[in-house]
Image 1 (cartoon, rainbow, N blue to C red):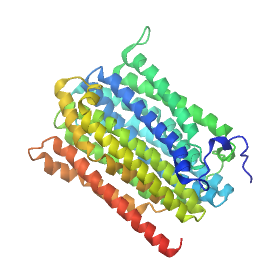
Image 2 (cartoon, one colour):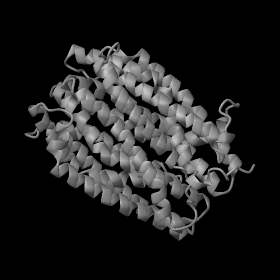
Image 3 (cartoon, one colour):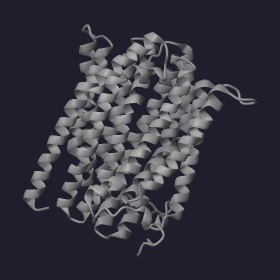
Image 4 (spheres, one colour):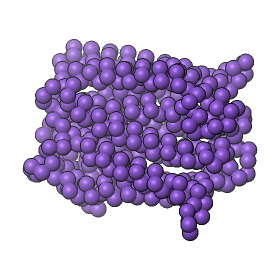
Length: 458
């Protein structure tokens, strides 16, 4: 099979030839911009909801954690699918790339339907886990969760299509699509939250409806892009008979990374339950603060996706020196970003947090959060990019073990630190300390792996 490339090569990046820095930046910049758009999407919700009350922020933030968990679940299809498609493209096996893409799409949509049904059907029990204090906050969180549960297939589909387009060298299309979704969300949020004309004010539930409508627009654009694509996706037949051997291969490769990605929000849910013991305002601080610092880790994740694609294609072509140079180029670039965001959060913590909530007592709690988490930003960047590089060479277990272990360690560490004079700030320090350890260990392990592969002549 020969892919028709004449009509879309101008938007794809050659990952196996030419200057490495330029190739990485051409691929990474749209991905980073896409990540920033996604961050702005979440921040827009928080800004509008913050004008309602801190309780409304807590409701949306708690329910939104299950949206975050979806990223871990979709990784079961996304990580392995992206890596295997990249390996096949690098080796010139175009038919194999199509089969792996098809298998990953089928896996993804099946999981999306099941997960969405769970969120809709079991919302009261899922929200009850957090032991929120206000009955109204609990009710708003349940309703918001049920609304976004209906949109789960849209979320899964969009995340997977972003990965499959990126691994072919096209990161511009996902950026354009997500930018349109952001504009739609900015327009729809105030309409459904505060009401206008015949539209009633729906508060937190309105934020959920606006989010799902924005996701519907994004998913529709991704479907149109897939139908227009002449490089990979147009050859995929998602309703064909499932290839369970391909699915098993994808799942075995994805499982460590998917476990790690799912564990992170699950541990954060436990942490949120601990935070709720300090009041619903503390929960609001955690939710707003995590959205603000996502300027680091969401951007790093976008850059990690570029590293994953770059390393995967060059590893598939058995060009380890180029893959190695690409990794170090990416590491230098993302380190600069991590240092910048550290300085940003340390210097501008108060004015940044005040954008979302203007209650003085809550603002001070938010400043504490941002200043403590500022020290972890560089190391979060290292963790994301290194995990992407590990996945590019098909080694997902080792970083997953390290990251999972120290993510779980946040719970006992938080329990110990909150028992001291630090109080609530002890929880924030447990997150920072674990992030520093994960970043350092992951980087050290990948450097050792590179040395081993070089000695083996891979």
